[in-house]
Length: 366
Image (tube, rainbow, N blue to C red; front, top):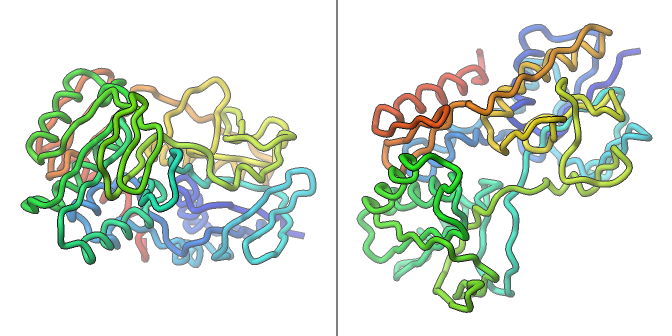
């Protein structure tokens, strides 16, 4: 009887698993993927989609087509709960499925803020509601519009600048970043300067060291007691656990992430693996960023097949000096590695080339 491998989520690591399976479809393993959407966004290109540099289709991976090539059964439904003890998952269709091996790659979601009824809030992640909110406001609002992007990290900067570029020339639309800390506080000073200059070029207002306590329908209440106006509030306030993890029993209690070893394998249940934002790798502090899920993909693909066949597992080697490329609204970006940075149009072209080459690997027919 074939062993059953269940892939939960269509994250960046799992699309590489599908690609590897498509290159050499296994005949000794029955594989199924569960995800609520037949296609998934590539996060690195999302600011470019907002800005208008890419069509939405340029930044989407066709999960269904990948599954077809890999001879993987695709279930278009979310997984609502996982029970490691009974080796069962429960889906949004009310079905229960058994697994011998399980891999989880469901990413993360934006942390919420307290909000009053009627407040128009949308998170930077997941992306579909954000893009829908942007296009809705464009279609129905002809008067003035104030957008507040709450957060001080790279996501807040990229979303605010991309939106400002999208609405360039529109004098009745104001965009501001409201950050509880100095902007990009964990980045080198040159990166912070590049971001500030980009905000100035695109008329994005910066309000730093201003913690938001609550979002009201037309106001942001700051911890200082001050209130500032808002009509659309975009949250880029860091990432928390995907809802599924609240109903996942692996180590005895639900957790914000799945603890795994360097082989991306759960220590208490060696038949369960996890990668990307939903995994906590033992001894490592891995930022919640798509680039790291991408790098874990080949290791995860190898190890899932290896454990099914009794072969040796490989270890993920994390580099804290990974290249970061932050887009600046226009076709400009700032590149950061090992504390060194530089910005310009060439950095955007470099990033665009990297992103397009990655997407090409998962295009139909590849």
